[in-house]
Every structure is written in C-alpha cells, then in structure tokens.
Length: 183
Image 1 (tube, rainbow, N blue to C red):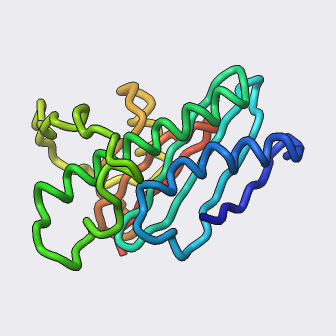
Image 2: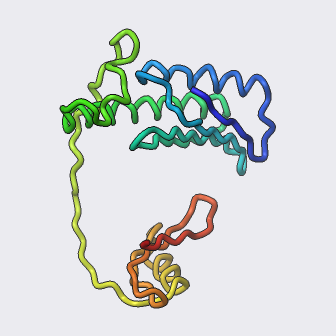
Image 3: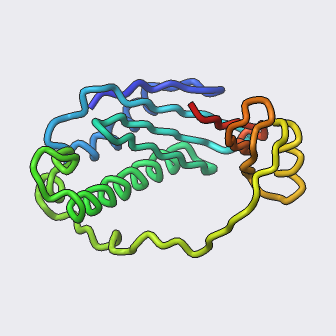
C-alpha cells in the first residue's frame, strides 16, 4: 500500500515517515490485493495538538480516520486503531448484507493473514434514537449561520433563499464554516 505523507506546520522526518509506513503496513493483511489508489496521510500540529489524518480510497468505500493528541506517535497509533475498527465494521456489515460474489465484501480478507482478528465489537445495530421534524425557513447563508450559533448546534439545515434548495451550514474544526448544497 502506497501513502503520500505530508506535513502541515511540521517537518516530516525520516523517523516519522518510517513509523507511519510501519504502522499502516499492519492494514495490508485485511486486503486481498493492495488498493490501487494511493492513500493520503497528513501530519499537523495545531495549537499544540498533534493531528494525524489518513484517507484510503477503495472501490466503493473510502476509509478515513483522524486522531488528535499531545504526542504525534500516539496519534499515529490511534489512527491505525481507528482504521482497523472501520475495516472490521465494514467487513461485518458486508458479510451480513452482501452474500453474493463480486460485491464489496471481496475488498477485505477474512480476519487478516492468520484469521485471528475477531469481529466481536461490531455486533451493535445502528439505531435512530430521535426523530425530529421541522419546517425549513427560507434564509441566506449568513442568517443560517447566525441561527445555528443561536441554537448552539454545529450544523443547521435550511432552505437557501438564493437557490431555493435545501442546504446545510456547519462549523468546521478550524472554527470556520462550511456549506453543503445539492447538485
């Protein structure tokens, strides 16, 4: 598996690069064939927190994980653990839903190379615990951001007055705002 490793506000040393390669190579045991596309790793230090983001594009699925901690090496370990949990979760879900050959289940090898990885932690069902209905009020993006901040949420669904479509504004981790619109 090939990864493009880059740093933001940090120099990626050879030691860091080797550690990332060594840790991410643990994931290869889950794949029949290595992914054809290159994965992306971003190491950054923002306000004293060491952040590691990893994106692995696969056919039909994209694995992505992000971990922040006070130590870069701990963040790398955490992101690999998250990715392993995601792979096991997807594998379990695919085994339940897709029993035919040629489906997405062929992306993952059964239990790694020696068959020792258990799928025990993925038995939970996805459950909707709250259903909320509301009327979409036509407004512009700025008003939607103000409404979102007033209710104290990190996203807000609204009817965009400029496009007459349903849109979502959200607060990003960097403190700025994002807008999701329909195609």
